[in-house]
Length: 440
Image 1 (spheres, one colour):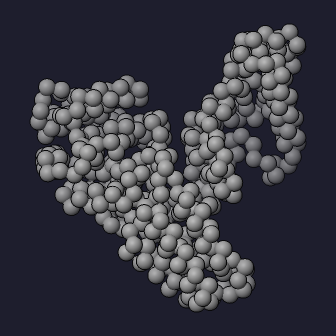
Image 2: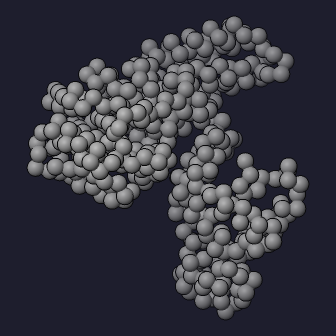
Image 3: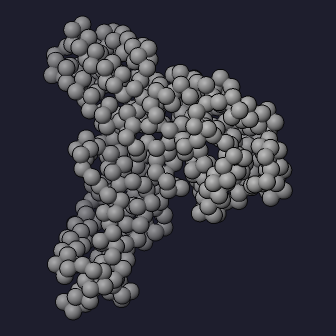
């Protein structure tokens, strides 16, 4: 997401980089390019104009310190304004109430049902909650089936009443069932349409009136651009929803929705979602998103994802093995699995400052580790634990088992040994000069 906008903004900043001071002319030229970049990203013209007017006012009111350049000053001002435009600070879910009732609304195809499953998984694994999903789409049996499949994947109960054609009654019964089952969060997936219509709006408004949800989350497909903003306004006028969820951020989107919705409906973006996996849901942090748009990466989110996946005790054991030069193929395979759980590889690379722009035209497949995994999985447990015993005959058998050439197996073995040598060198470095497993 935002690749095109990031490139255009980077180009805009070139106008002022290298300048000795801030002037009316270099600010005006930069502002013009920033505004055009926003409009091309499908941001409403009125929002783009107000945004750039704020930047101009702040830029011309600043004195450039000797420690920074006009270009750095402009980037900092744009970063702050982008974060403010998208809400300033993150907005947490209100999880009060027993049970907490969360109503999910949006158009058909926006990713409502998938998000409902992701939210249940998020609340279960990260917040320690006991959620229940509710299939309240009375028009599409497929939506009910999809929610049941998602519920099975994440081991979360799903309440459905397929023969009941009263969505309000389903919601009421679901809340009663949640109380009986000691579930402390109820997530209600409502019906959607291909476009905003009165029947859908009336139905979801009636559900809201009947159950008084703690949170109403509007799910919007970020790929629809300005149309997403218009749809959000129509829903907000009827539901006064408490938060927005942007889905499909891994798609070909220009980013206009993320930059415009908060301004238009004055409701915070609470979550962003990409892909179909149940663990690809992130809290929306406006300041971090602003950094990513400006090519600064997002090291905070990267560290948080790593901390969620890596166990402290396992990290200490791994560090001890590395110190004794006992790091083996099974350890390596385990680390690969942890990295894969952190999310899309290209997305992870984009969070590293300075790497995002360099990798924008590089296709990084999530299957990049498959060849290495196949080689290791073709080894016996003894071989995985003892890399030094791999002689030519064992390597030949491993190559045959994973369908690789012996040259590929040898290349991997060589790379693995180089990695182990590097680990040994790092362990000999002073503690303050390295970042070992488990260190923060």
